[in-house]
Image 1 (cartoon, one colour):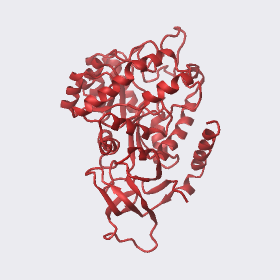
Image 2 (cartoon, helix red, strand yellow):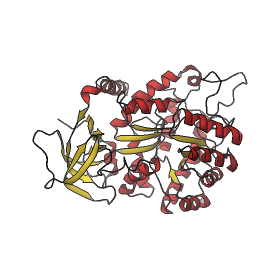
Image 3 (cartoon, helix red, strand yellow):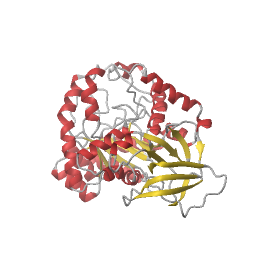
Image 4 (cartoon, helix red, strand yellow):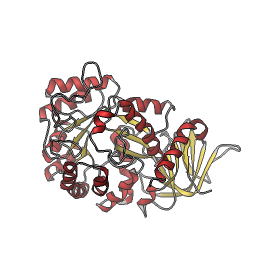
Length: 440
């Protein structure tokens, strides 16, 4: 482990340092097999044509016309899929240090430390085959800047739909709890961090302030959480009236709302308030499931990371309070995932990357299959369904004419063994090859 981590970091740093030389634009991609995520059909010997970073066509090889001298990426021996989407990541969170959960880092790390981590984590995420992500919580307004720098080609990473910090009640999951009154944190001259708001007026103002700095998404913290002190995941933190005000203000500004909610009451209140997605949804009950189904609310349930937290948490100085919370809700969340999916609730793929190491995002697919999905349904949750939640259906989620030429290639058949997605060999983003790890 001491050898592998530095070598992996070195390889990624070389990619970052030589981005312009490393990236290779293509005009055509030959796919031995191409998975149509919409129909579930696997089409053999296909050619994807790329124009200005988008898919121009996807045709059988016999119908495709490839001009002499064209830039062709030959993936004849592999299965090609659309680039994957993770709807719940924290790119600025580090997972590499043994004491990563020690709260001293809250006071010693600067916003620049978080930004350095986000740069490396973005590259790891893209290398894993995730060409689009939704960052749902980082220092203000790191994810916005990261998204812009990646979009302009200055940094390597997935397309980022950025929120600001999650908006929390005083003393809630997003606050700094159980310290002396003299202990404070702030980043801006007005001594505010754009994350704590109480009451309808403050909530409206905070949503507007976040929108001012360019967020595409508002994250509201409707219940307590696991990785915080002095609160409980199952306890509702905002009133229904407050949540409605926040959602109304966000929707008025053209932003969607992701509601962090573990507890049953907070989940139902967030759905009734009009939140577009419920993050975690660990303790959702039968009434909440039916409410989500009727209203079309999307659940984003991180059913992999319980495995990582309980196995690795004790080694990483995870506070006992956090471990006990996870033990109390982890298996319940998985069981409720199965119930909600069986009931027909809309689901989108989201992992809480940053709780576990970035780049391992695809490990969640196997857990989704274990708890009721077919491999195709799990893949759709990270392509078509995720793109719809993000409002990116015209651009991402499928290999179809007009969408971004975001492609991945794997050996084997992910419909037979979804774990094949944990071993992505080739990544193409916007018609540019950003990873090619095929054996030579």
